[in-house]
Picture 1: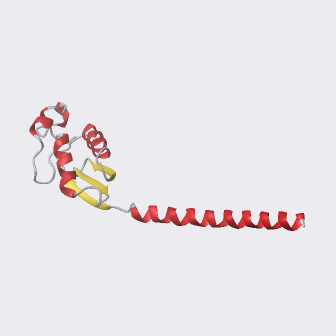
Picture 2: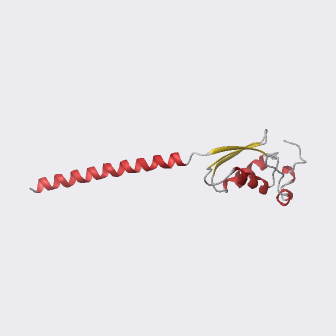
Picture 3: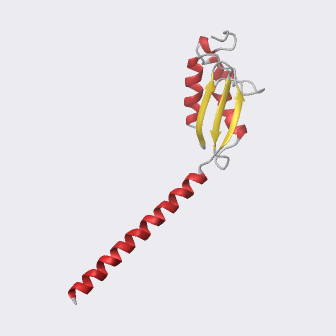
Length: 126
């Protein structure tokens, strides 16, 4: 009788562990599909690697941004973000608040004056 009880308890534990693991895998799948984002390309006035570091770091702090990469030679900032957390206009505003032009919108004047001289628009691209 004790052997039968032990066998049933062991079987119940094994089945419980199997179902718990299956539910965890299903939850992981939901997270992956929920985090897929949209991509936005913004033409900036960035001219050097310091600009690249400054813009990428600044956008990393914006809500909903998954990644931000600036191609210095083309001056295009590629941002991957979650549309349910932020918008393209908010991201352009963040670029402006960092001191750089965002597409046709000019940089925030106060932020622009705080940029190092090598990052100013008057400096040629290097």
